[in-house]
Length: 279
Image 1: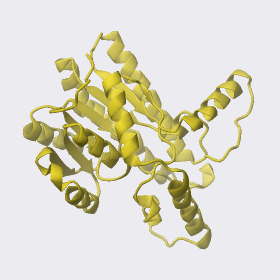
Image 2: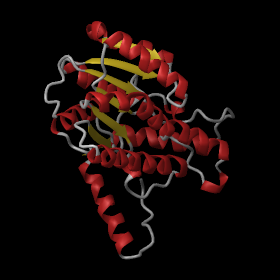
Image 3: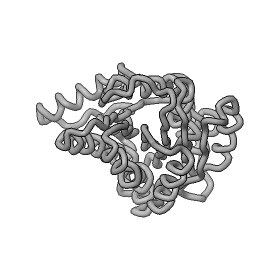
């Protein structure tokens, strides 16, 4: 069953206070939906509440760590209590990792990235999907990345996003076998304008030591690319809303990046080594 009209529908978005999550929230609110913003950052949640004050009667904000299964399930209960139902779930929370050789990245950092980028999705599946299946209605959106369907160069991030895309495909296949009407989409954005343009230090939260000049330059370079090449997060949110209405699985906001998908497929079929390209 297609969800052509979002008016009155209820959406839950992890990582909803900034970036792509905030863009989805704005798009859904603009189409008349009610939205629960789940985010680990209380300051970002407060800013979102202020910025979206015109929709305050249709917004619920909850401070939630997507990596914490108990917290996610408690948030689910709060969403059902406040909203009465959940029609759209966007498992969007995520963060990056340091651009280091994979053997130099501590095991603990790998786990930290996967806890949010991969297990954060799994926690949302366990918390929300069974009720959607029982109702035989709704839409589940998984945020992967263009690095989740191409060759990535940032080990933990790329690997976790490949896992995210695979999980989305698995949900789709499992629901299809059940003949379920619940829809699934996998969002694979590339550069998207977000708060890291003005606050590049937010890209790195795992380690506490001071950045050296090379690391600062790397952060500044990413912020520059986001500013120059990134698309607006609200535009991505509108694409997600359109995909929900159309029951589209793959959402690729940057069509030019799809050449990398084709190149990778040719490399696999031709038994060629991966291209080392700027990602």
